[in-house]
Amino acid sequence: MGKSRGGKTLKLKERLEKVGDKMMQATQTQHIATTMIVETKELTRRFGTLTAVDVLTLFVSTGEVFGLLGPNGAGKSTVIKMLTTLLPPTAGSGKSQILTSFIRLHRYVA
Image (tube, rainbow, N blue to C red; front, side):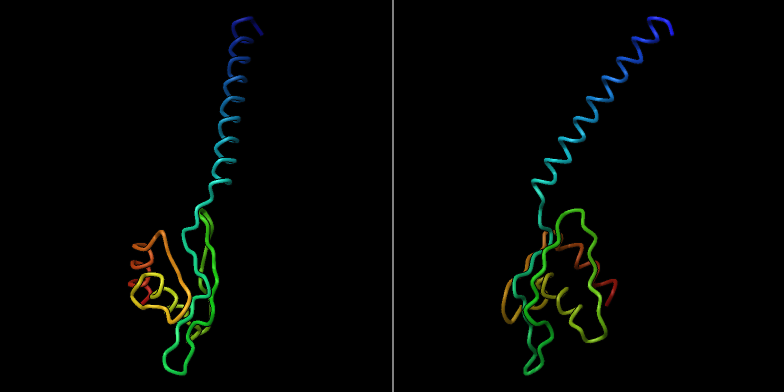
């Protein structure tokens, strides 16, 4: 290898190391500043004597994959309705940073 080519290789290596360092810093910062996009604390919904959702505590962070699974009548739609404020909880609390996405999801599923 000639000098110019070796110099270019060294500069490229230095640039790649800098990019790698920046990516590592960004990853660490993102990990530290994890944002909860869905959070429920003892969320409960009763319809008369029927308890549709019973003390649900749930945390979903940015970047996580999340799904509500269960048989018919398990309370999945009721949870979504409470998170989108279409239905008030009987007890507990819930909040969502992606409220509009849940509303669109509910309309698609319902």
